[in-house]
Image 1: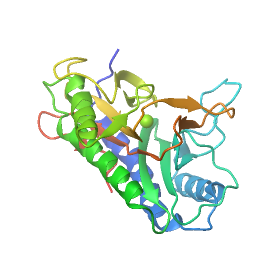
Image 2 (image 1 turned 90 degrees about the vertical axis):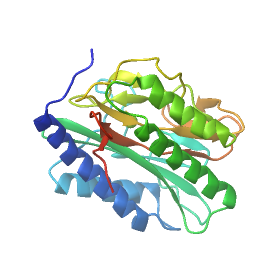
Image 3 (image 1 turned 45 degrees about the horizontal axis):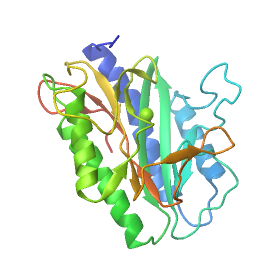
Image 4 (image 1 turned 180 degrees about the vertical axis):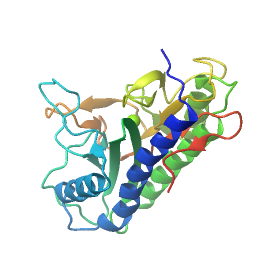
Amino acid sequence: MIALKSDVEIEKMRQANGIVAEVLQNMREWVVPGVTTAELDEKAEALIRDRGAIPSFKGYPPGSAYPFPGAICASVNEELVHGIPSPRVLKEGDIITVDVGTIFDGYHGDAAVTLPVGEVSQEAEDLMAVTEGALEAGIAAAQAGGHSGDISSSIQTYVEQRGYKVVREYTGHGIGREMHEDPQVPNHGKPGHGVLLRQGMTIALEPMVLISNPRVRVLDDHWTVVSRNGKLTAHFERTIAITEGEADVLSRW
Ligand code: MG
């Protein structure tokens, strides 16, 4: 079932996502050669808690044998999503995806960016630009009266026309009182398919982009998802609210 949000609920989600955005904005300065992903995680958690929010990824999912240990997902280079913060030291030329989730006043925020560590290769720059462009294309296609497939198709088309691949196993998702709500919004699909988009739907769109081959696997740590071919990957995510006009981007920075 898809939970439509009232204006009051959307404002609460704007606050939760505002805290996410603040963390990601700070990451642009925190991500430098020599820092560890565990240090980034500590800084993020401190800021989230200072704002009166809860880091939603930490301990997720409840009751799991392998609850996620970090406040952020820190995914480096070939790691696509769900990288666990660790003593790993970032080095010049790496790229890192930081994914952040918060709960504020009962509502979730969720967003992610891939950032360069110092100077990076042209290959990395191009990959990041295409992934961020795909997110913008998805947001532009999100409007009441359309379908979730319009978003999926826009993301897929943007990525594949530029010679890249979208992941199949992981998708965007509804979000609100829960981190993951209906509907699922894959990064591939057909216009006019999927669910009807209605005002008050809140969705986290999250293109995950790979080079040459879309196949992924999960490492023995039960979380980290990597490209099978070992090539670089990127992931951008924002939470939006569907309106009759342009989508309302709740995680704005
Ligand atoms: Mg998400």
